Length: 370
Image (tube, rainbow, N blue to C red):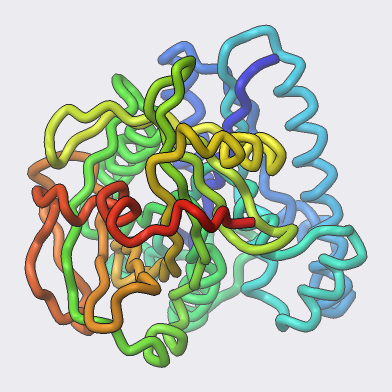
């Protein structure tokens, strides 16, 4: 059975998403990667005469969600049956995009009708690449002419852009492609991010990590583009598999479980291979207590600030400090920290602040997390 990788390409109005979808698909195919593309459905419904205006917002997005859910299910079944090593299912918008257009109550209502939850959806995609609307940074190129279903003003487009990106905050891998360059370069930056995520040419993880003063939790919770994700992770070294990490991301039935194998190249660069595992596999690993070398829990605040996605970790054993990380695609990539962060120092190169070291120092190996 093929390894199926679910990637969402989304964005605000007039972000170049349709062109980008075709470009990414063609580039991946040229690299020998099998691709299944799931087209956007909202425009099709609107052009067929089914609109939020004549159906009502709730009924329109309920219908849209059901269409998307079926297409997604069909695409995944098709991908799993393909006779190849890896298949990328590339979605033109994801199921969560609907949340930006309806109230939380309405969204929850049709989620429940289909037996899914918001967190389950958010955690189900392997990566989300967000293209910022031309209305934010490339206003001279903002146009309604290339999409008959589009009617948003520039101000509307900016508001929708923020609303959409806020619902995707908290997904395991989110990258924002802004309008800091011309469109051709925007496409190139997008493709570089996609290739980096897929591990082309190698599955590298390049991160910078910073020690910061303990954040204002109420302020973090007030941010529109911020989401808290509870995380528990354990480190194991077994005779059969060597060294690896398992992680529970989320709570209860909405949690996902991930196994990660890392090989260190330098203090800032590592080869990283991640795979989803089942809850039973996760628990089975934890039961091998003789091989568990550390367990740690934390609250991760996933924050979109400008065009950068940050992961701010708050630990139960510190009340005066925390850490924040940025994932890069090159060691020399420029970066900055959010203005509200009070920096103590960078700890990328300090082994004592790696999660394994913190788990071994502060974690409780006698208390196995659920």
